[in-house]
Structure formats: C-alpha cells, structure tokens
Length: 101
Length: 482
Image (cartoon, rainbow over all chains, first blue to last red; front, side, top):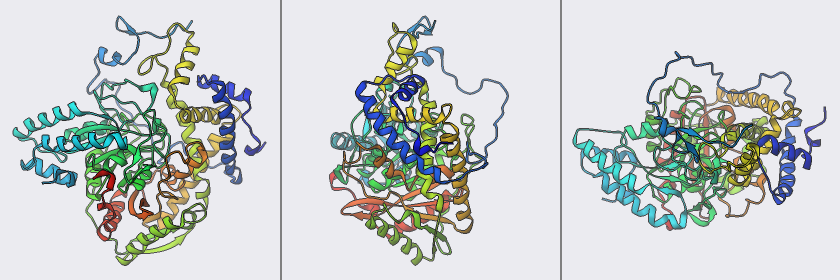
C-alpha cells in the first residue's frame, strides 16, 4: 500500500472533491487550496509511523449504546409556520428549492 | 455596590433576596458591553432589548416568589448555540439572518434558573479555528493586548468575561475551543466529560468530540453553571448517566502526572515555567507529582484533525441555501445552486476542512485516513486512561505559547492548528479538562490545563480552586477593560 506521505491532491482530485462536497471554488482559491491541502496532508502522514492493526475503531469513545424509546411524539413541538420561518423561499406552507429533475 | 465585580453566585443571591434589582444588573453589563465592544469585538449580537425584557419579566416572577440559582445573571453565549428569537450565525455568512425557533437544552435550563442572555459571542466560523480571527464578523481582540488574538474558537466568550462584559459565558470545545481562549484571556474554562452536557441546539461541527462548557472568572461560578446545565436530556442520545456534584476538597494526597511530551520542543519555555509553578504550588498544598510519558501524544493533533474534518464534511452538508440562512438561486440547476451558495457562504478554513474531510472519507482513502484515525483514537484514549489509573490528574500547559499577534498565523493553517496541540487529547479520549489562569508572560495571560478521569469534573474544580486560592492572576482586570 502506498504511504500517506506519497499521496497528493492533484487539480483533478480537487475538482472531484469539490463536486462531491458541492463547493464552487474560484481559480485563485483552487491554487491556494492545492498548496495548503497538500501541506496539511503531509503533516497528517505522521500517522504512518504507527501500526494500528485490528484495533477496534473508536467512532465514539465511551462505548455508548442505543437509546430506545416508544415511537411517540412528545414534548413541545414547533408550529408549521415556525419551522418554515427561516426558509428564504416559501410558498403555501412549503419550502421552495431549486428544480431537482 | 459595584455590580460588575460580583460573581454569578453573588448576583443570584442578591437578586433572589431582593437586595439587587435584575434591571440594574442588566443595565450595568449592557452599558459596559456596548462601550467596550467596538474595540474588543467580543459580541456578534448584543441582545439589548430582549435582555431588558427578560429582566423585567424576572422582576415580576420574583414578586410572585420565584427563586433561581442564576436569578438575574447575565450570560454571554457563543453564537454556535441556538437561542430562540436571537440571531445565531456561527460567525458565518451562510447563516446570516438565521433566528432559531427553539432554545438549546442548555439555554432552556439556564433560563429556567433565571439567567438572562446578554448577547451572542464571536467565534471562528463554525467553531473551526484557534484564534477567533476566522469570523465573518472580524477578529475578536484580546482585552489584555488589543493587537493579540483572544484564542479560539470561543474567543468572544473568553474576551467578554475577561473584560467583565458578562460575569459568565458559554463556549463549546471540540479540540480546545473553550480552554485555549480561557488561557489567552485569563479566565477559567471547563470542557466537560463527553456526554455530560446536552448538545441539543449546539450547531454541529464534530459530534463525537464536542461539548458545551462554562467560561468564568472564579471556579465556583464554573461549578454553578455545570450544576444547572449538565445531566440527561431526551433530545441528545449520546449522553451518559451523569450527576454533577462538587464539594471543594483540598489536594492533599492528589497524584498528578506531568507528561514530558507537553513540555518539550515547540513549547515556549516561559509557558512551561509558569505551569511548573502551578504544579509546585499544588505540591506545597500536599499533592505529589511524577513525570510520565504518553508516547502517542505525538499523534493526537493529526488524529484529531482527520476525525474533526471528516465529521465536519458530513455535518456541514446541511447548508444548501434552502431551509435557512443565505438563499440559493432557484433558477439554477440544483447542484449548481448548492455549490454556488456554499462556495460564497463558507469562509476559507471551513471550505478547507470540508474538502479534506470529504477526501478522508472518500473511496480509496477512507481506510488510510478516517478509519486509521479512529483506531489511533482508541489507542490514544487507552493510553490516557492507563495514566489516569495511576494518577488522579494530568497537568500540562493549555497552549504551547502565549496569545499571538492578530495576523501572525492566520495565513498558515498548520501553524494555527498547532495552538490545539495540548488540548485535543482530552476530546479524543472524552475526558474532562480545565484551563486555569497560570500567570503572565510579557503581560500576556497563559493557562495550566488539567485532565481527569470520566465524570471527575469535581476533581478538576478542586484543583483549580486550590490554584485560585494561592494566586491572584484571575483577579486582575485588563487595562483595556477599565
């Protein structure tokens, strides 16, 4: 397996990541990001020094378990209008979004 | 009576007994906050009218017999915590204008005890930063030296308390965001055990790491806020069974571990000296200490950033200009509309972290970065816990250097990340950690950090109380705030 220290973010990979992350960058931003992101990755490669093997990954550190409850709506609820009041575009009690299809 | 020199506990007692009127308290703090904010920029919003109204309502409740642990106490709240009816921006353009229709659980609990929100404090955008320079509303200035940073990301809260613009404040801490500004502003800051305080209403950055916590002048106020805020909440399913109790105890017999990795290369010698002074002071009060090694400390920072960025890329997917904040252009195809509003609405550092997080989670790199960091996190946690089996607490500097100049590190992301090198370990392990004022280097405040085992906030507070009994650093008021 190639070492993390050999991994580089290329202009093509950056475009791909921006597509995944839904972020439109300016050309100037792209140039600066290529430099900064690769410097940060270079720093991250310090973890190559450590062998982790089959250690159980810690998604959470405290070993939490599921919290179950009855499927009932409880407590205070927001009124319909309150839930929508921050949406920039609304119409007839709905939120308006760009056309999807 | 000088209202501005009272502790939160004193304010609540005097207000409850009728010796002090909530409106007088609120007016005194509003006057000061409004006067000092133009030069310190601690607040994004000063909630003047609401604070006045809350004070009047409280007066009516008091007449009907209401008593509260925080009656009439003005509180400054980091702008990442949802406050019903008060704009909550996360210091980001993309949330400009967003007014939450509900209160975070911590806010509900504070209000129920009579606390009054005086304003929302400045921060690094979405809590991503260590200096409060990365705010869409400009940097917060350190009240101890206006050309220096206040630390971050809860820099506005730290500066507000230091400059006595509020007696107490709330911060949030993902990798040191309460403790770093506490150290840089000469106040106490506590990051609770993961799961001790509800995150409901805390706008998410990295869910598995962050906690809300208090920032105060005195240790007793820190305890008071924990007492009110902590404990189970049905709206946060990642909480633990937690009951906050603290009766101050002395430090006789306390065993303190001093890990050498936190005092070596990269750490300002003068900072290390001040922290050693604090450790020696504890020794003089009957504690013992021993130098130890936490070899994996070397990997904490990289491990932390990989996990935090990965979680951020997922958490910040919700900002699309459709449901709140900045508006996307409805005429564009959806993917272009989202990409445009996100490109324009997020600041540079937020975009950097989203992209790197996306990278660390993407096919082909997941195992090498994200999964590896999670495994490393488990190893780091186990190493911290094994030290805490032999010792009651771990002592380190809060930051490796004193507050730096505004602009000094901001162009170089890695040099900014270095400010977190001593604090991230507590978040990775989920253990509580406190920063307590440890003195000054060239007139600039620095902090000593203590970590303890899960749910041992009581121990941290007793240590901090002992330090505050033996020193006067925390009583000093910055000249800019007079």
